[in-house]
Length: 215
Image 1 (cartoon, rainbow, N blue to C red):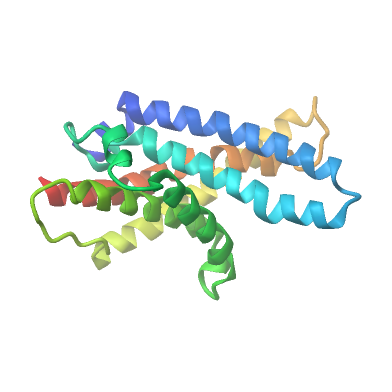
Image 2: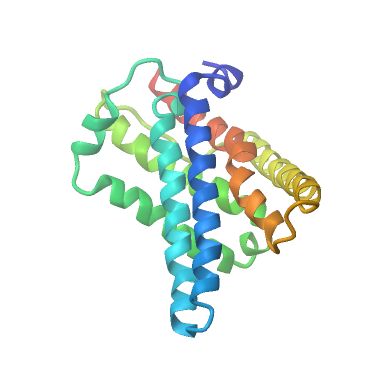
């Protein structure tokens, strides 16, 4: 399965649609929550730094699960329900991994200055964990989770380009919509809602490289 075939597959389109809807709800409800608790400093901090990032991590996991097994370029694979039921707390592990990375990555010296890399790394980490469980159901095979240098360069270029595209689209849409909606933060809301859609090729490119190792 090529990258284009995977990007245009019904399962991936469904996953992207679901993510966009969930992300919109998370950002809209999150903004309302922050306004509501703005007078309570501790609650505001918890909502901004824990509750909302956890909800974003959950939205990313929803995308990863709905995109399976197309995410790995596989036409046939164990059913998702069976894969998740084969181990204890696997959905929780995916959400926790995405959530912890959302907190740690911005603190790293290099990656913290490159927000374009945060979501792709979260997505690739969640995809690699799901693939690890999948690979365990197949005949023993050596799996390399680290992309080779040419592939890594491609992933970096795609991530930076996707980030720039999302910034441009969110600024353009916010400028058009603000004629009717003057609420602050509209550009950020749009950006967070569409970022995975434009960064999906990065996660998919990585997932397909994993899946080819089983073929």
